Image (spheres, rainbow, N blue to C red):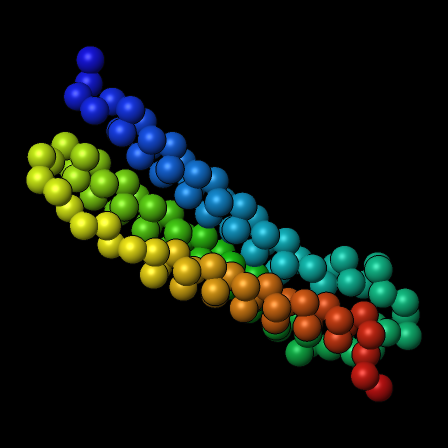
Length: 128
């Protein structure tokens, strides 16, 4: 039997959860990048004039930001997995690093989500 097997299994489940979240974030980024195709069919012809190159550029930038964030999440998850695995095998007590990075990542996702919401409302309900 592996020493501290349940701790290692929990560490692996956490790693896989991070990877699933990263894959979903990257898939969402790809969807955002192609979102202008959806807008072309969903928005009435009168509202389509507001979706010029500017709107497509924003969607492409936001989509790439989500893709890069997903890649970064996988990298951070891999580093945490290896570090936590070593800490589980260690007999000394180690202080928990805290949740600062997790909160920063959640804040960045929320900021990107709000910017996409504003983009969508401007695309569907143009000001002029």
